[in-house]
Length: 354
Image (tube, rainbow, N blue to C red; front, top):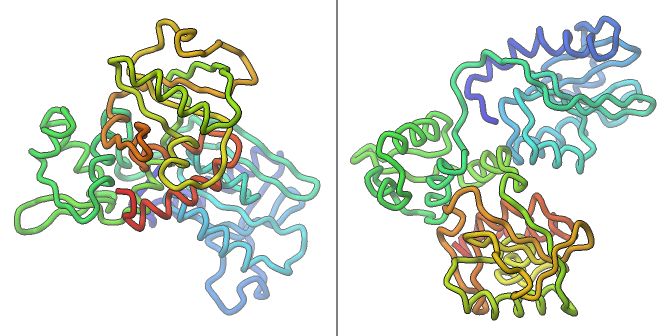
């Protein structure tokens, strides 16, 4: 989630964070002066609170983008190194999406969002609140990454350095002119997309930021996933066998996740093969697939929007979704998905596969 007005975010956080922590701990939490030693010659925390037997060193950010969370983590670690154990570094954002929560967990970063959701870890303390539902009266809405709206971000990310007129985006995505205009306006207000002054054409302003913003709202489980097992010595042998059989049909399909990452970068061996199929498989047995509840080595996803097939390529002769889509999907995968995602992201930002 992205909120543009940081002054408003910080003002709301100054009141809401002490209130939320007080409710969670059952004791009053309020602001106190930050110890001078914690500042290390730099600006101090956005909030320094005390309550519940803890001091809270709080950094407030306006988004849950990957780059924002990583930068906040580095700063909090540096600023609180060597301080007493009773000081908890805490990241506060308007709302933590699923991808941001997974990243924070990996970094062992305590966080709280302004809806009331939280994940705080410290010696002798564990706070976990899921699904904060409070309304946050914050400025303008963030960008739209619904399945259909995401077609626009996908096209822009797939064409680095290329300027798009809105009429061209309408034609490419199959969306209405009014809807494209609305989504584009949200992206430009959020500084993720910029307009060319001469003709109003559009280009991505910051590819990393747009990737992070989309990933923060993306959830693989929103596609319909069926789990199967098939015989194969390795992930690549399973993929090649399925590719041969699926290519004989007329329906669109494309590998994603670990399998696509391997085809694009040959990075990170894999066992699980995941692929999109335009329609659910009517007869999985014809493809050598047996439905299972666990122990699967194949995921067949029916997409919630056909836009996932935009930009399909055939590296190594296997249909694969565009690297941007594969990177998004990796967040919902097991095995060495984080390692594969890092390698694929680097390629996307270096324009090597786009």
